[in-house]
Image (tube, rainbow, N blue to C red; front, side):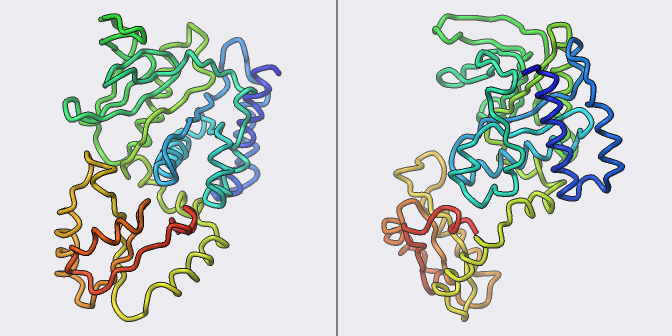
Amino acid sequence: QDSAEVHGRARLTWLRFLLRHGQISNQSALAGRLKQVQQPDASARSYPVVVTLLPCGQLGNRLFQIAALLSAGLEDPHGLTVALVDYYTLQAKGSVFRALGPLYTRPSSLDMDDNSFLRLVGEGIIVCKPCSLLETYSHDIGRYLYTGVSTCAGQDSHGHDRDEQCPGFDYPYLRWSGDNWALYLALAVRQTHKELKDQGGCPVFRLNGYFQDQRYFITHFAWIRRLFLDADSLQKAARLYDSLVPLNGTALAIHYRLEASYPWQIAGTYYTLATMMAQKYIPTGLICVIFSDQPKLARKKSGRLRACSRRISIPAEIDTTTSFY
């Protein structure tokens, strides 16, 4: 298929999605925007950039990543087209992403080259590649965005030393003002596309990272929350909740990460101190509802949480989607 035709179809799908979910006010506004993509100039890559991502991690991680992607698309609706190429997310995660089904595009139908990834090789080693954006964090450099035209130094994928400069930009978070980080994602994509225009631009731009900060989506939070809200799954979760949690007392949800599995994240003392702090502000008895990948072990270790008047573990057989809701 011709790239212009494929991208035009993806553009139409994105605009119809925005119309259906209240981000375009009426059909005439949709028609006006479609004039920009009816006859795109393929040679000049003038049609809007398709932005996508290959999600990583489980359901919770993917919620952050997809929320960031959708928010960036909303910040620049004239220049960016959002598409999802990860069919696994839409299928395996079930109803959480049901509303996003129309945005799915087969990866083979887009102009995507595996060599266009910006990725980590080894411990903190960055490899420059065009048409990508990597969001990363380390204690040494803080949070950064690297575009595919970023300044890169370190080692290549073969372990050879390198110290070279790709033509382009880094976007350190600390220099950003305000809380609308989705805007900076959109600007980074636009700027990278502009810098590479002489090389054909970036017809498909991929986001790569976890994006675990509410500032990536907080501006559009109410809208995104509605997209992730599935009525059938919510009713199923409500029935389960009513069967497990008594009416008297206040439920306190705890995502219990065991030290053996996550040695670099949360020590056991965190939960003790956190529940004690909650007890100061909640006058009724705390009913601690414990979520964990290892519920039996989590329940045993949570015995140290003296602030909990009662502990309830979500059973292991409860699926991820129901557990989330």
